[in-house]
Image 1 (spheres, one colour):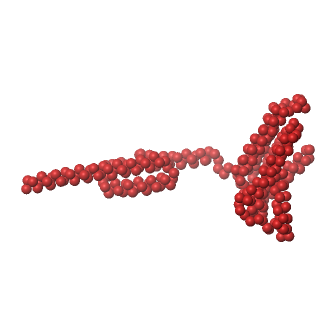
Image 2 (cartoon, one colour):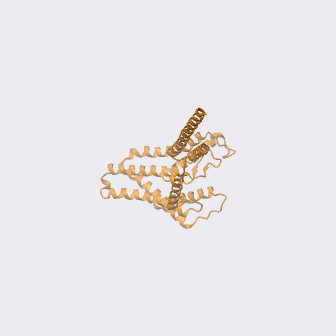
Image 3 (cartoon, one colour):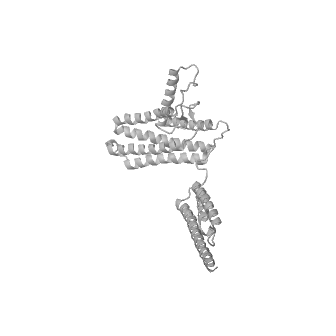
Length: 306
């Protein structure tokens, strides 16, 4: 059993290295020994935990093992074909020139069969993509990785819970709660070593390109800049503007409004700017009407005296 586990882990490790070399084919990739150690621990904990969970579950619920295994297998077997159907790509013909369409279909089915068998126990480093000429997805989709490990963790916890409920007297000498906790922690350790590998030991990339304090500092600097640009102290103070100045203010306000909309500023700011422009227009109009009325009265009185 130990030899079989080591051989499977070694195969998974070679698949990880192969996936890195395929993706970065144009570069000379140098994988450090620490990277090999992280991959080995990651795959060892992941595969060993998965095998033990399935064995424990099958020991108490023999009839339910087949539906669980078939469901896992069918999901990963049909998933590449569903993506291929959604892409509306033509049927791949360049696999082998001597193969007919039936032969090509058989080869692709065998490939997805192997892909589904690997993903039943661990995340496959080499992802199948049927609409690609090389049949391999060279991009890393972290959303799929996160969904896979979350669902796998929930599935392992559910299978262990069912085993704990229906366990027989054969396990009366074992501490069942401690065993469940150990298996869940072991799977979490596998995820931890995966994150360590992609963050510190991957030869060509990092999981997080910038540190969290630097990201928080950049965010706070942006917020301070936005607050300073919209503070009342930065607005010009003075007398009521003339009609020409008011028109320029309205134009500037409209320009600022459009720029604020582009920068996704709050609507209240735009609304205040429009209200300020409206108040300026109204006050100038009232002032002009009063001046016109006074001038009319003076002209009327001078004309009467004359």
